[in-house]
Image (cartoon, rainbow, N blue to C red; front, side, top):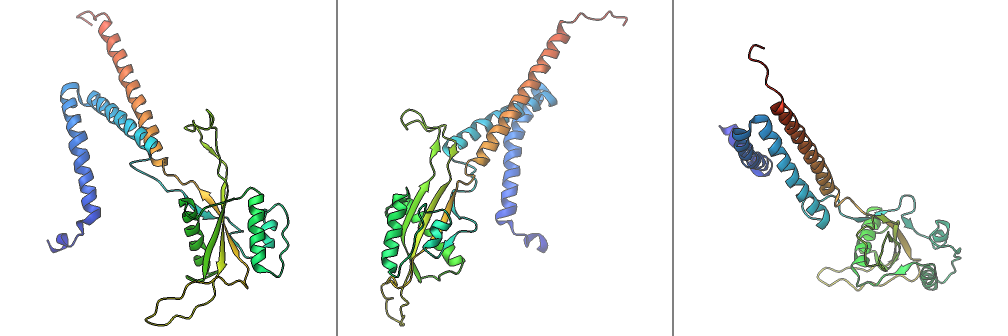
Length: 271
């Protein structure tokens, strides 16, 4: 008894028991009623077809409205091999800029020139008030801190540039995009600036962050991972539809066999 009471019923065992009781009560009660009226095998086929049809409708609703059982959310991922760009000249070497960039001794002017060149080469400079800016900046901050390029509080995100991510096909002058299943690669370039080290004193508020104008800006190159948010719902919808169609086909063939057997002539009594 002491060993039984030591089992943790929250939340794993309790959840498993609730699911077993719910399935046994709901599906089992329906099958019990159908089985007593139609027979064990026919009642099972009818119950299975009804359950699969209901799961198909539920999965289609989840798939359409992105509700219910969800997969991995979209997120920004580091571009392999060229995530942290620490020199201005590397932007053109890695293919982010078409025109080669030659840095000078003026770090502040070089950063402004790079920003202007990115905009000229079809990179969109995002407004800091946009949610897309905040998401990319947060992802870039995590990458920088995890790579130990800078520590927390040693840098500041100053700009975010965006390119790609167009969807197709889009019809009706851009207003009909329900069938736009194809996506171009979507990239962002997060510009970070090193900060001047500040001395902290106990009991006093931290000093205001000041960008170090003697050190060049660095960039974090990220690609958009679309995730698999609707994949579980799509799997439930498609698999339930296949089971429903298979069950209906079995029921249909059974009805045909029963109809043929009933329409056949009876055998003589002596046979």
